[in-house]
Length: 369
Ligand code: OSB
Ligand code: MG
Image 1: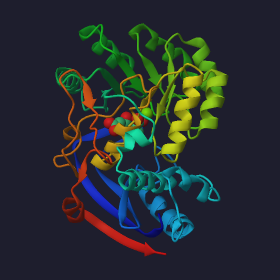
Image 2: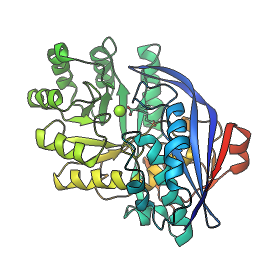
Image 3: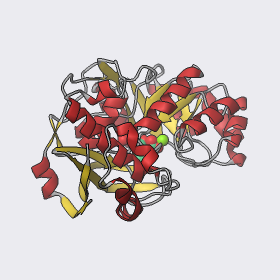
Image 4: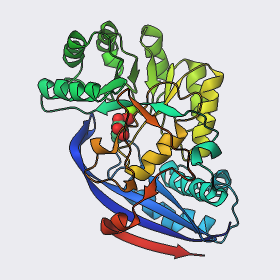
């Protein structure tokens, strides 16, 4: 397929509830969507970069700039048969994985449509349904958090993850465990702790957490390995794993026992599959992380989660937890026992509401070969 044109667009969607992590609170998301126009087939992708460079060094604006100035010109006019062929074409640009990832994923989307195959089959997936958990942000009060957890458990979610930071951790986990002694529970610090917190983090052991996600620096393996040696609870790395080489290094060092895979963070589906495969070789389970995606990115996360080693519930949950009105049809729903059923239809299995996307577009540019 010849890549004839690439459309960049920014949309803005207000979140149903604010989302707060150790690095800040947001009320709405600006999202960069890309359309690859190839021989009459349009492939779509969502860039997971946030508005601000707090989770990772990339942002919506850097991604737009790098795609517009460097990545799109490297692809325009090229004959590309497969989504997996995109990564090598962009290798000259260092980093900017979220910007690269949206282009590669849009190409997989186009490939699936051209071959009339479900994208999950193209990726090598096999699950008929995927287990779902939720990520619940820092709230204004402990009571508010406990209410949220109650609602999500009632909705059927199989695992509760709460965001933690110094001042919002042990006491919170204590209250959750007192009320729900047996639920699958984990926490995510988004790099909020440092070396002086090792003793404090050991207090988390009493809560029988499934994992502690990214407690230390976003780019660290060494000190996570040192911490993991002192803990029975599994550490999970999110921010620190940007490639399959990172995964191999982290696992050989013993820096974690579980890996969170976000397709955007690692630069697209091929790298996500490579991370999945390395973890599988080490006997380490993975799960699919989320970046508060709209339905487009969510549908790609669902497809990725059908791979065999995605054996733990992911942060891939129902559209209505995030958006009053999603950009896909049907919206993503979760069964009362906490699964998303996989749709055996070509493409993502969901239809993009292009008219709705057009209405919330704030910026748009098409670049041609
Ligand atoms: O660390 O997993 C994270 C959201 C934005 C940035 C980072 C993270 C998250 C989440 C939310 O935890 C996951 C989701 O529900 O999409
Ligand atoms: Mg995380």
